[in-house]
Length: 151
Image (cartoon, rainbow, N blue to C red; front, top):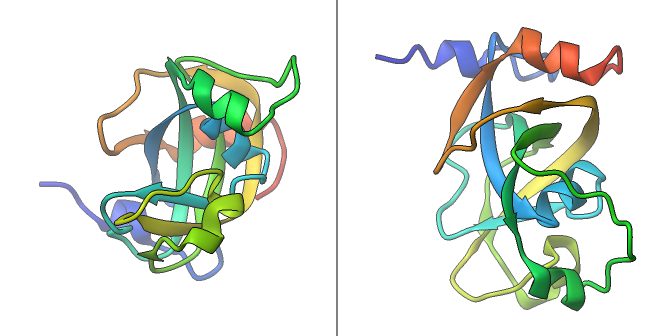
C-alpha cells in the first residue's frame, strides 16, 4: 500500500514532498511545459490530487504535427527519455474550453485542463523510463537535477 502522505505533504508552502509524481508527455509538449509556455496540461481524466509538484518526463515520442501546428523554430530544444523539469499543478482541473487552446497548445472536446504554474527546467536531464499514467521519483533526484535552482 502506498503512503499518500509521502506525496502530498506539505503542499501549502510548495515544498517538495519525499516522493514527487512523474508524468510522461510527448515532445514538443514536455519542453513547452517546463519552459512555461504551455500552462494547461490536457487529459481525458481530471487531476486526481490536491495541488502539488509534478515532474515532467519527455517521452521518446515526438509529435511532428504539433511542432508544425505550433510553428516551433528550428532548433527548439527537445529531449527524449529523460526527466526534464518540474511544474506546480495549481488546483482542481476543469473542462477544457476552445479559448484554452493557446495556453494548452492543443484543443479537443471532452478533455480536462490542469492549471500549471512555476515551471522549472532541470539543469541536467535525468534518464528515466516513462510511466503510462504516474510514476514517482525521490525529492533528492529532483533537487540534484535542479542544480541549485530554488523552487
